[in-house]
Amino acid sequence: MQTSKIDSKISQNNKFEAKTGTEIYKNSELDFFRSLFAPFTKRVYLVGGCVRDALLGREIYDYDIEIYDIEPAKFDELMASIKASGVGKSYFIYKYKNYDLGLPRSESKTGNSHKDFAVSYINDASLASLRRDFTVNAMMMNIFDGEILDFYGGKKDLVSKTLRHIDSEKFKEDPLRVLRGVQFSARLDFSIADETLELMKTLDLAHLSKDRINTELIKFFRSEHLEKGAFYLFKLSLFEQIFGVQIYGSDEFLSELKSARKFVDDERLFLYMLFGKFELDAKEILEKMRLPKSYFSILKEPYFKEMSSDNELLEIALNMPLKSWLGAYNKERIGRAKELGVYEAKFDAKVDVSEILVAGFKNEMIAAEIKRRQLLAITKHLETLAKR
Image (cartoon, rainbow, N blue to C red; front, side, top):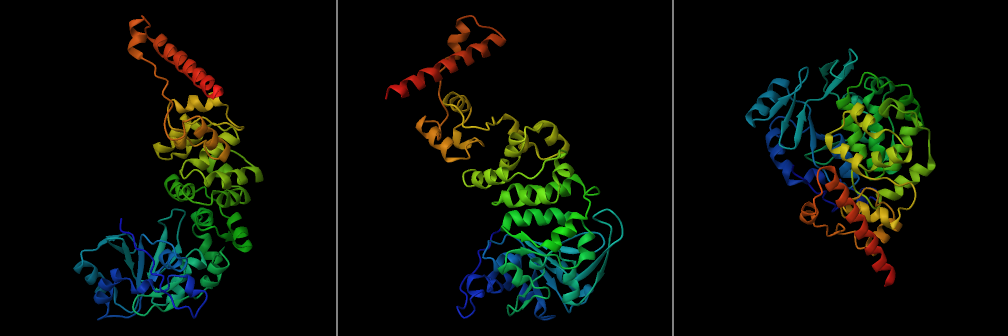
């Protein structure tokens, strides 16, 4: 996947813009589309998350482009000429490399499925932007001159780091936006506006598919500010709907999440700490959620509520260097792992399996003898360290 860095050479005249990527429209990758559309229209805009991330100075991985003042037939013709692939049934969006290109549209819900929407062409930018979820995702930037269209106060909400819905009726048409709000808060470290939070509380996730829910949850699991997303999961009483268990707000858990993320950059961390902290049936929950198989490796990761003993740390290190252990999420454990010599490398108990076989051990007794010798090696290692 292509990655574009934000051009930060901004005029110092405007204090807000001096800290943002308002010149992203000058990106040379967009020259292709400027040449393609210039004979037909100059109202071509970057829209959605790429504008938000540009203004926040974040890396952009994908671009959404919306084209105005062009006949749908001519647009389809241009897309065919560049061999862009069309996606969607009721309304075509075209994909070209890491770009999504489409015409402005309005959407109206017609049923419970996320596909049950009536879509119609609309050449009015302010009306087309109403279908966006949050104000910060509704800004537009012209690829020809960098003009920013901000009909609903998105720029102001960027400054205050606030997620605010645009239109209550439109927002309610897709309950997935509740989880989008949670994951955006965790990724961007934004707060959700009070009125938006109240609206979210009225929405039911029951008709959402597991796949759609998990797509948003995984973005949350990968986010930097896990404690912010977890705070809103508590506020919205979503633990029962998502994980099948009722858990009430815990400031201690949020504090531990915030601290742990500084040391462990792993998308499994939130679930590992959730399952361990509240003593949940991890296997049952993972199976019900139908998350990718990679998350099931959490079941093999020991969890300790208190500081682990040296014996426990070394036993874990028999299988992995402790820098790979999800439980190495505080200074004390990391420091002790380094002192024990098992942070960067596994503990080598130097057990000779062939010797065990020659001694006549068979079947399950082989594993038991290996374990016994490993524990003996741990004891000797600790005795040696104590003499230093």
